[in-house]
Length: 77
Image (cartoon, rainbow, N blue to C red; front, top):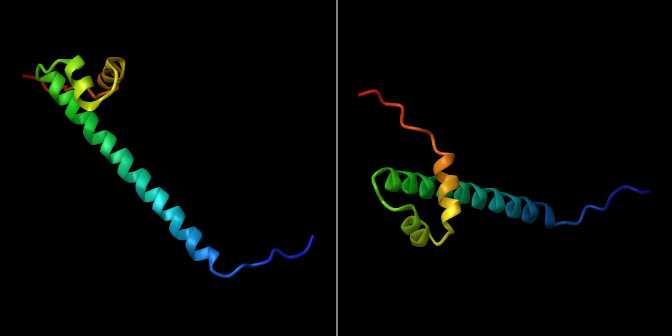
């Protein structure tokens, strides 16, 4: 087993590709959080869950899961 051969040009390209994936993942996660927040807000304000599911093109059980994982509003009035 000899020393690994270093091929020029791949290091920077691989680093760039890896960063691109991390950036895309961050954008995806943030967009899901934003979408889910709007879903929770809409349903909390009386928008039908089945209509929200149609609007964001997911099945209604997915909306139920989003709602069940949302933080409750703990304001005292």
